[in-house]
Length: 364
Image (tube, rainbow, N blue to C red; front, side):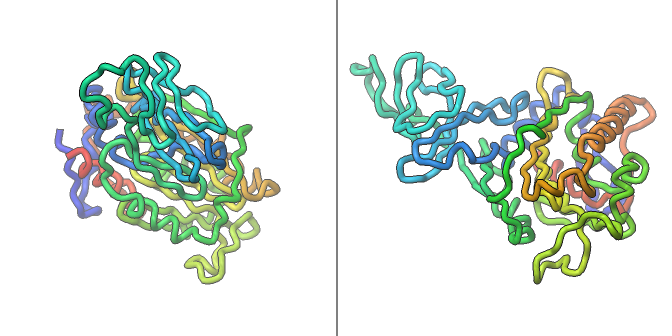
């Protein structure tokens, strides 16, 4: 399979359909795209005080990596493996407070909140012990707006390279004031390849054909696309009279009525900012179901609750189901002997072209 994508958008063809259909490629995609990218680990609300520890499973169904977040006595936040270095038992299943150590419930091995092994019952006569591998493995952590991010293999790019453009563009938004709304949590599962869902997100060409409600809220004649190295933005303007942001003084959108900032970060994170707050979507391929089973996690962080249910961010469940139906039909269509790859609509699919070129780069 050749994943090369012509850099000239107007001449380029999309990825070979084998990328979406070949089950043998699934694990390769997991390791080369997901393990090496900055993945969302959840918010840090439960880790505000020293001595807080919380387990986090990274991309359940895909990487399935058990991790721990721990804030030590000095206030420093650490990302650690949640697997005991003795016999591989998962150690914590629920958040805990006022901890000074992490103890494995199997054989009593204890670790400091920075991962350092402190005590190992029964190992008094062990030679060459402890070794560096007897401490808990550490993973890099980044904190943006009260959200944790990590990469469990050497990342393709720095956190700053991936998220810096967003941080700069959205600096006026008080992200630390956004509050998680558990009642709005949704996990959607459907039979389509994860990348098809991302591609659908990255272009506005389908909106008037698939989303009648969203079409009524957006000024599609002024829909804009912007690219950064490892991310991109779709800037959606509101129709007259519909809900919109009040851009901060000096913002590049000053004087425009922005309905939504649709940000994507390679390969699977969508950060949708509306006047009411943030809808965060994480796209996760599910192992063991062939190449075409996907879970999308929807998490809402509310800034102005009185604006919920209005504008472009007012009917997210409806839009989601419309998108799912579309990408599931694409997955079925890819099996046709008469389809191999397509072309990009230059005025609308530059971000899909960027996504495919980043995939080709990372898979190589």
